[in-house]
Amino acid sequence: MSDKEPSIKPWGGRFSEPTDQFVERFTASVSFDQRLYHHDINGSLAHAAMLEKVGVLTAAELADIQRGLEEIRAEILAGTFEWSVSLEDVHMNIEARLTDKIGITGKKLHTGRSRNDQVATDIRLYVRDELALICKELSRLQLGLISLAKREAKTIMPGFTHLQTAQPVTFGHHMLAWNEMLERDFSRFQDCGTRLNQCPLGAAALAGTTYPIDRHYSAELLGFDRPTENSLDSVSDRDFAIEFAAAASLLMTHLSRFSEELVLWTSAQFKFIELPDRFCTGSSIMPQKKNPDVPELVRGKVGRVNGHLVSLLTLMKSQPLAYNKDNQEDKEPIFDIIDTVKDCLKAYADMVPAITVNDAITREAAMRGFSTATDLADYLVRKGLPFRDAHEVVGKSVAYGLAENKDLSEMTLEELRTFSSDIEADVFDVLTLEGSVNARDHIGGTAPKQVLAAAERAENRLNKRS
Ligand code: ARG
Image 1 (tube, protein in one colour):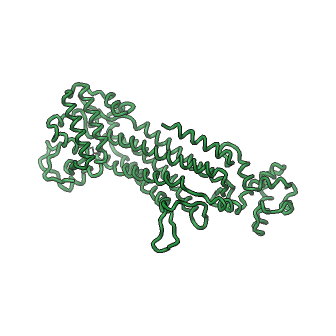
Image 2 (image 1 turned 90 degrees about the vertical axis):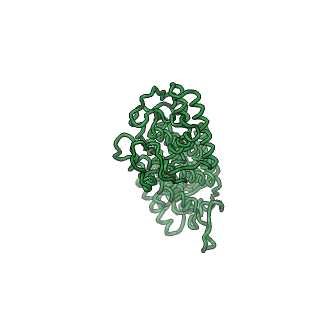
Image 3 (image 1 turned 60 degrees about the vertical axis):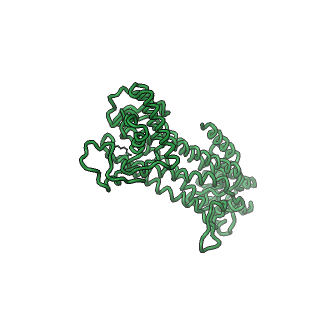
């Protein structure tokens, strides 16, 4: 990046001395906002086309601007464009280059526009495109989860509350719980995308412009639903970025919870699952180690995304209307959220379908911890006992099982009947792990039949996405 001094600023007319060199670097954003070049050029093309439509630019001037901007896009893509810190940001770098290329007509592009509505447009366009990519990757992860759920619809594992064995569940059911969270994340991103899809162009610096502009036209050219309603709000609003960050934070929170389970489940103590070697790393000192680095990193990365959400909220807090330079600080958090979320989604969308489940171990784990105790209590209720009395009877049989190191299903009928004479031979239908999960046979329940039906509904929802 060049740093020529002294620099001539596009806004330099009223100044009597050059900008202090440190201040120039301190106030510049080009090092990071050059990422917006593609959307900045598209915004300028729409603005220029609108100016021509209303008679502010001639057709020949528009053609020059279009050619110049496309050449600049090609230079940037090719890496030959020279970014200059003294030109402050992506907007002025591109505009200055346009004037270099096409002469005086380049200086007409900014008619009826300000960098304030320009940047508000660019960042909306950028987030809108990235949202689409994020939603695509999220859908891919959901597909992976659903396929894993189908594959393991019958696999028994312990379900936990307080991380203590609670009741048996199916592995597929557990995966679909994650899918539900991601489904809500998806709809939050969509919702944010709908609200941000209004075009600020024409708000100019803050109050609108005196030219006979057609805001509907430029909005339409850029694929926005409509122009924004209020010029002051248009240049100062960053709600969409905050909503996006909040949706991303929730997604990352979900991924971090999921990660925590994957880390636990791959440990020697659980051994519920295996992650493919290509998603793990070794230790430089302990030869036996296979570390679940990918889930650990995803779990850790929620920190930076939450941090960016707080940055954006704090950045907007107490800002008076309308545009303030504070808003330049929105970009790095937004960009980092996008990079982080996309990387995490890619890693998980690639990894999740390749998870293998040690079903013998998950089944054995469900056998320990008296996971069918509630089923025995429900059985006694069906035999006429009030639930609290049934709870007491089962509590005693669990105490006996603990002393004898036996699961309820491993006790003889005689042993069980010492706790209640209501217990009969049919008790074993409910004490088995399969009996327990099969009995939870309602929408939202863990029965394999229900898991397969839920997976199909989830798949149908996914297929309806455009
Ligand atoms: N780089 C600036 C930003 O990101 C562009 C808008 C500058 N506007 C101004 N009035 N200084 O916010």
